[in-house]
Length: 492
Image (cartoon, rainbow, N blue to C red; front, side, top):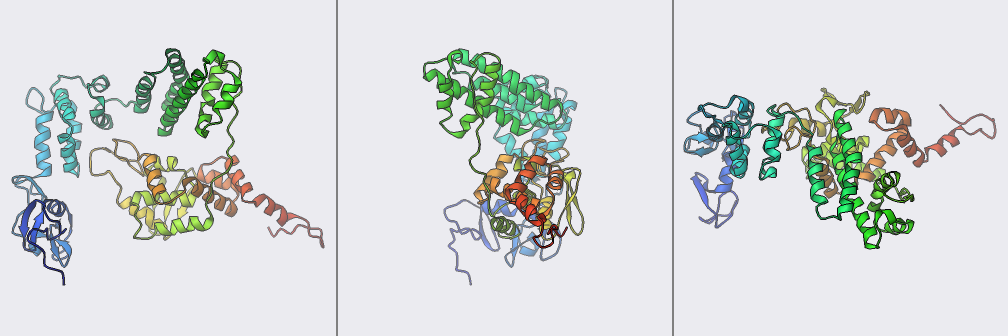
């Protein structure tokens, strides 16, 4: 029997000293619990009707009729049963009213050019998120109004030249996603903006040299990859890190009283004594040498001292935990972890997977990383099924026609691999160690070339893992001549 609650306590969460929203048959309800209750939809356990479930029946959410709540939550305009935002109106109707005012042109009608975005926002399942987005972004609201009334032209320059470009960046991405603006490679643009900011305080000669390097190496590569449809988020991040380390290298030789033209081999050798990330300056140094900005000097490759790997038992333990209902990871994070632990796929590649790479059948999930197909058997397929049933970011207008297996919060973009990396690391997964362990287990079960073809790896990578497992020695032992018969001991 539960203890009697103080009149000042919320009957659901037990908090005191809070603002109360209402009093229902069960007692007083605080504002937070009221909002949670009036946003929950599902099948009522009492009448078995799919509707709003604000009440409680035997500790299970139920409809107002079964809970005896004397309130009608149906919208006075559209009839939707939902949390009332304004008197008699649901969040969807309130959002439509607010957006109608913003998207109206000088003739009193919704601007035809802006209509696709207006339709996407008003029809999204999670209307409250759009209302919150507009409430906390006054610059976005003002720009929508200016675009609709023709005060500002609908072009990329309007966003890049805005007084607060970061405040309207999400609106710009929505315009691209819904066809109001031509597609643009935002990472290339972001890199150029970042480069200007990064070099603002650098030595003028160094800044000029790094601009040349960034233009002819990083930007050229980005434009080429964008043209072929292969530009990835990792390229942008790698270019930033490479440029940052190159700037630090130039500061290093300046601090030693040298310039790029007078740099010595000792400068480079002393530079490499520091953190391993300093080896990333190699590309800049070699480019500078080839273009005669630096003397002819050597910048050796960094050789990894050890290859991280977890034991096969640790790998199996991680996989087992993914099947546990008490696992703290979200469905998309569990699915990504499964693809890492079963098939050794790097998270960068996993984050960029598309829905067509998976096929769900009654008995299994079929996955394709290349032209070959692989089967995720039961019970592991349950992890993927749960993810597919609850794809995130599908209740807003961020994705017009989602094709991503892991859709992100940015319009038209997949989930950032950094998000997955942080979550799995926090869950105790050694990412590189898990990937290496997965590949080693696979090359022991299948020929290395088959693993390479199926999992989108090079033959050199899978062969290296096969050698590291000792399989080469095992092959030799299985095939060496028998001392008695002089024939091979292999049973193949």
